[in-house]
Structure formats: structure tokens, C-alpha cells
Image 1: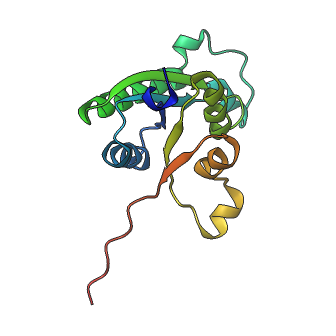
Image 2 (image 1 turned 90 degrees about the horizontal axis):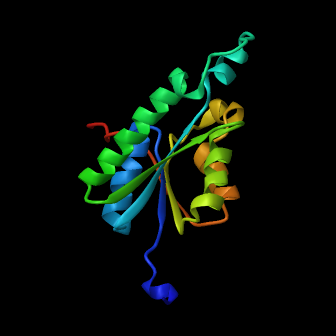
Length: 158
């Protein structure tokens, strides 16, 4: 099999947000992939809450509400991909540090040719305190990244 005949692999970072939905819709229309890998990163609830308080244990991973919510989000992403005519496989990855690093780690396992992600386009002072997932994926993934910005506001009538 030559490289030209190999089917490209597209990894779509999906968190259920309007920006993630928009990115998938644009990728389906503009890049026209056939098969896609839907990736949802999730952070265990005990990590989320440990920032505010210490917890001893929340039980097994499958009982973690964050895992359950992540699984539902990933299923939603697969359903959206299939509604766009794509063949999708679901993947979930636990985020140990930052969501972007979980996506970058998945690149080594799934070996995509391109990553698709949306962005919220945080600007101003808020951008100084929050790093962009899309920006970090772009700079650390080592593969092309297709970034779709949020929908521009409607022009105001004059």
C-alpha cells in the first residue's frame, strides 16, 4: 500500500461545546474525511474537587460522574459525526494535567494525520490567565491541526 492509497486519519477533539460541534461540521464539509476518531478528554471528579478540598475516594472509575458525563459527550460526538456521513470511532482519554496534553498524548496512540478542534478565541485580560487548548495542541501535537474559530457575531445594522 502506498501513502497515497492509505486512508487519512482525522482526530476530532470533541467536548460537546458549540465550538466543537462547529469544528466537526466544518471538517466534514471542507476536509471530507470518511473515517474519524472522536476523542473526548475527561478529568476525574476527585481531581476537580481536590482543588477546593481533599477527598479520600470516589470509588471505581466507572462510577465517577465526570467519567459518565465524558462518555455521554463522546457518544454525542460519534452521533454527530455519523449524522454528517462519517464513520466514527469513540475514544476517551483521562486528563492527568491539562486537556490539551491529553489530546497530544492520544496522538501517539492514534497516529492521526490531522487534528480538528474548535476554539473559543479568548482575548483580552482573560487570555493572560487561561491558556488555549487549541493553541497548545497546535504547538505540541507534531501533526497538522485544523482549528475552527467560533462564529463571528452578526454585523450590527446601521
